[in-house]
Image (cartoon, rainbow, N blue to C red; front, side):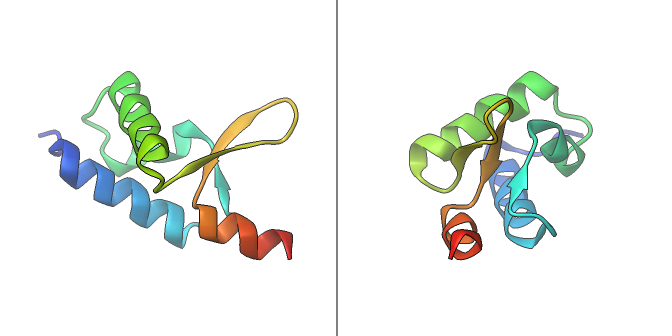
Length: 76
């Protein structure tokens, strides 16, 4: 059974907070709920960017997701 949108948002935020690396690929969030389609997870991750919970981070060739507070800590 797929998680609700709010439950999935919480799971994505927790994964972003607790992951060993501050930057995550969209595919890293797929394991938050294997029953949810990848496109739906991407829509929710993009909504979290709009809300300010996540931000885009670019390596120059790849766009990843990250928590704003973790990126600022890594860059110091």
